[in-house]
Length: 135
Image 1 (cartoon, rainbow, N blue to C red):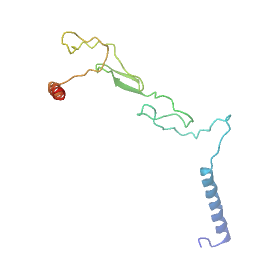
Image 2 (image 1 turned 90 degrees about the vertical axis):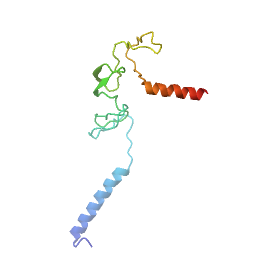
Image 3 (image 1 turned 180 degrees about the horizontal axis):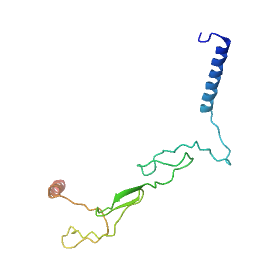
Image 4 (image 1 turned 135 degrees about the horizontal axis):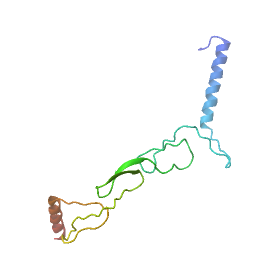
């Protein structure tokens, strides 16, 4: 036996009762009335935010987390401008494209769009593939 005296036995029993009551509080579901606020444990929430990159830095809370407010450096869609903005915002500069259109007679005048460059080799492969599919 791990105890040699009555006082040791009482100490072990009290310890067992304390551990048992602690475990019961972990597995017992407690519901608050609708009028009471949920008490925070005071720790940081730490859930992954909707942006999929950053984590919630608020104290432990109920409900949804706020939108990401992290400032990051982003490049615009055309790649000619960089700026520090909120993670959830999209950066679009006001520069006009000025690249040649596919017809090679007119220039593109759209503002800040994704530039699609096609190399000669991939264009040649695409033409051959298109011809094979059509025949």
